[in-house]
Image 1 (cartoon, rainbow, N blue to C red):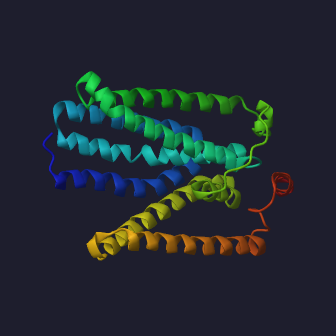
Image 2: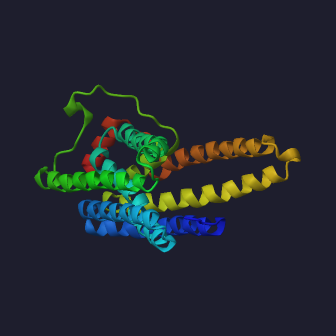
Image 3: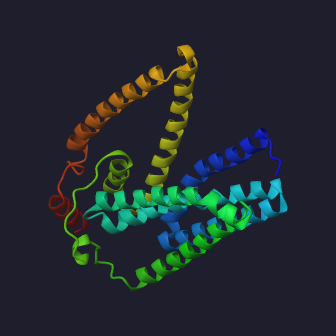
Length: 278
């Protein structure tokens, strides 16, 4: 398409800025309209963005490509956060960390597989734009799943809570590191009617912090002799130590302000949630 670096930067900026802004609005929209409607809307936007991207590459239209990236901000990150909120809804009374771990791994694995497939698929079809038509197919499949989920909710009983035991799964040791711990903690601390907005705020804060830290690490590396990595790595190690201290403070706060909701076992947490529901 003959896009220069400045134009490529504009595309990236459109996606990043709009994704951050739309994250909070999508959270409010989901908590207001419900997960089923939001799922169908977000998936439809993703499918439309994939179609426009394919058309833009075929027609070599930079303007259409910008429009596609703008529209993708309405469906990409909000869709992932919606998935996390749905997992929080179904598993809040048991095995939430294990379920959230599976959810996050699925997203990462899907992103990795699609990235690996891009070049071979483009070589096979003769055009990189055909990757977007493939993406449109996956978006259509996601839309079908979203509609199926809406039908499932209509038939499901309000009092029934999904659990791994019903599938005869053996109890698994939860993965309590990284994003799994943070995301699952949000669902335990925030009322379910506001969990999507809370996840949106967490996502915005995480992205903003990561962007700032990447810049700081780059500056440190630029001022290191021979632009080595030793000082930047030391910075990340020290930052990890700060994170450990924050984790300890969070644990103390949980004891005194949240009635140990983050440290209770599944049985005690279910009993407390049941008493709260009554």
